[in-house]
Each structure stands twice: as structure tokens, then as C-alpha cells.
Length: 247
Image 1 (cartoon, rainbow, N blue to C red):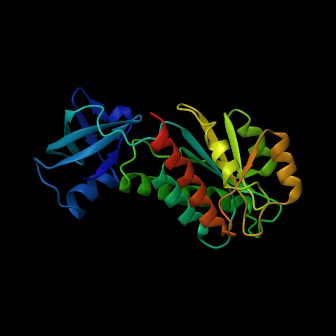
Image 2 (image 1 turned 120 degrees about the horizontal axis):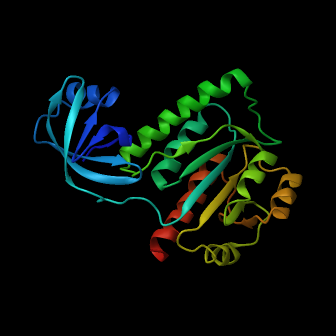
Image 3 (image 1 turned 45 degrees about the vertical axis):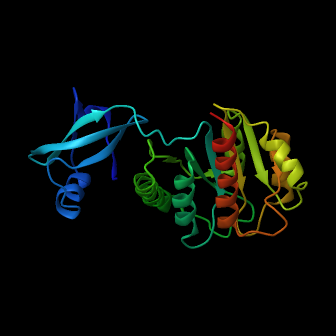
């Protein structure tokens, strides 16, 4: 079943009015008709709706069942991703959103090959945010994860101080037994930050800074992973732990 996102101002009593690109997608691409059903997500809640008609440039969606189909994790995952080369960031964002992250923070780190010019950061962020929304629709998320402004590593660490737990997958970390111990510290309602290095990995000084900020290094296994694989694996690991152990 399809899923669409709206802002609170698009609701009137028991109806949502869906306009813009979603109106065109519903009416002209999907060719949906009166009586067909889909989910509408608004302010973190999902509602089962039925098309009751079309009014001008809006789809009128009648609410059948409120606050249903909750797909969000019992924890908040923040992905701090070292800027990768080419279009890898798009893949990382897409898969991280599907797996349940709440925010993605692109980070400039010592070994990043990519150095974004200031004038390009805005257009990149807009592109990444569109990918997040598309992935959220596809995976039936209740919210669209925010793609934040590009930060330096130090800025990202400062931002992460408000989170409950910081994880840094690092090839020199202790084994999986220690990783299991770290994951056991995660409780329902917590915020978890995950720092992923770029293609060249973390500089040792960055690991030292992260540990001084309270970050815990973890292992993702015996193999060395590409940055995009590490991001997906780390987020997936936290997602699975949360959904298997937390409510």
C-alpha cells in the first residue's frame, strides 16, 4: 500500500488534502480512483485513508483509521557519515532511511577525498533530502528523516553530545563480544549516534577525539568494509537489536 506525507495544515477534521507533486503522482501516474486506500503520515503518525474525491489540484483523503501502522524504531538513530566519493552518499541515505535512521549528518573528515564547495552544499542537501523522502515513502516510514547541513568532524562531535550513546565502528576495535556488550547498553527511547569514516577511514586523532567525547568503538566483523557497506551494516545492526530486544 502506498504512503504519502503531509503537513498538519493539510488536515481538516477527518480529511487530508494532498496537493503538489503527490497529487500528480496519485491521479496521473498511479491513476488511483475514488475508494482506493493508502497511508498518510503526518507529524510522525500514520493514518489509513480512502480517496473520497478530487477537488481542484488536491486529492481528498478520508481518514478510516488513525494512528496505525507504526513503523518507527523504539530508538533514535543518528548517522554521522564521512563524505564519500561519487554518488555513494545517495545510496547510504536511501538504505539508512529504509533501516530506520531519524537523521543523517554528512561530515567532513580528515581523510575525505570529497571537499564540497559552499555553493554546492545547498543543492546537495536538497538532492539528499529528496532521496530521504522517496525512501521514507517506499519503506512506509511515519516520518521523513532530516538530512542536516554538512558539518566538520568537530562540529559533529559537539552536536552529538546531546545523544545518549555514540558508536564508532573501527577496525582496531575489540571483537564482536565487546560489540554485543555495547549494544546491550541501548535502551528504549535512547538516541544513538553512529560515526562512519570515509573511504580512507578515520584518522587516529579523530578516534581519540571521539573517545574523549564518550564514543564507544565497536567492531562490524573480521572483514574491512567499504564506507557504504559499513554504514548500512552499523545501522542495520542497531535496527535489528532494537526490534528484537526493545519495545
